[in-house]
Image (cartoon, rainbow, N blue to C red; front, top):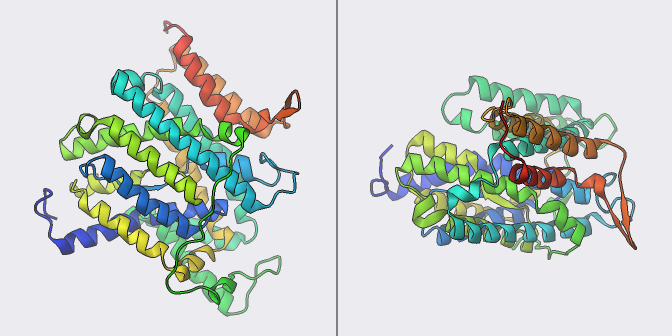
Length: 428
C-alpha cells in the first residue's frame, strides 16, 4: 500500500473507504439492533457525524465515527421494560427511545464543555480529571452491566447464538488479514445465512415464532429518507446519560494520541484536542436530534489506520459517504433489522466481554498498591454493580421520585471523579 496522503490514487481511496466502513459496520449496526433504534438513522448519523468531525478537524485527522457502546447502558437504563426509567408506566417503546436520544443530545453538549476546558487548561491538565483509575472501572462496569442483555437476547434460539459466537471466535483466532479485523461482521453474516436456510426449510424458533421476519420488505422502497425521530427530554434520563460521555471523551483522547503516533503529527495540538472534541460532540448532538445513538471515534478504524500505516484522512470521508448511501436505501435497513435477536446476543457475548476486558486492561495501568487508587476502584465497582443488581432504590424528593437504582454507572463515574480530585496521594 502506498504511503503518504499524496500517494493514494482515487481507486485506492475508494477501496480503503469501503474497508473502513466494513471494519466498523458490524459493531455500528449492532447498537441500533440491540436498542431498537433505526439502522438507517444510525448510518445517516455515522456518515454526517464523520463529515462534521472532519470539518472541525480541518480534514487532517483520519477518523470515522460510529455508534457508541458506552452509551448502551444508558439507553437500556432508560428504555428497559423491567429496570428502565419508565418501567411500569405503560409508555410506548418509541417514546422511551425518544427520551433516550434527547439525553444523548445533552451528553453531546458535554463534549463542548470539555472542549472549552481543554482550550482553557490544556490537554495534560484536563486529563488529570479522567485518569485511568476512573476510566478503567467505568469501562469494566459498562461491559459487566451489559452482560445480562446478551443472555436475554440469546435465549430465544441458543443454537443461532452459539453458532454466531463460534464464527466470531474462529475468525478472531484463525482468521488472516482482513478477516481478522471483522470477526463480528463475519459472525453476524455467517449465522444469518444459516438462519436464512433454516427459515427457508420451514424451521422455527423453539417457542414457535419465525426465525426471520421479512414483513417490512413489502413496503420498503429502493430509495428514501430514514424515518427520523425527534428527541424528547426528561431530566432524569439526561442525568443517567451524561456521565457516559466521560468514558467516550477519554476514549477520544486516547484515539487522538494513537493516531498522532501513526501519522507522526500531534493532532492534540494541530488541529487541537479542543477542535476534535467539539467535532465529536456536535456529531453526537446531530445523532440524538435525528433519533440515532451517540457517536464516538471508532477503535476499529484507528486500528486499521495503524495496521495499514496509512493516515490519509480521505478514505475515512469516502467511508462516510458510503454510509450515507446505505442510509438512503430502505431495503438495506429492513434486511439488517431482520437479523434475529439470538444472533445479536451471540455476537454480544464477545462484544460485551471485550468491553469489560478493555476496562481491565486500563486498570492494569493503575498501581492498586496505592491506597487512593484502591479506594476509587473499589467504591466505583460496588456502586455500579450494586445499584444495578440490588433491589431497586427510589428516593422521593417532594413529588419527584429519583430512581437511584438506575443510576449505577452514572453515580460511580461521578463519585470516582470526585474521589480522585479530593483524596490525597497516599503511600503504598
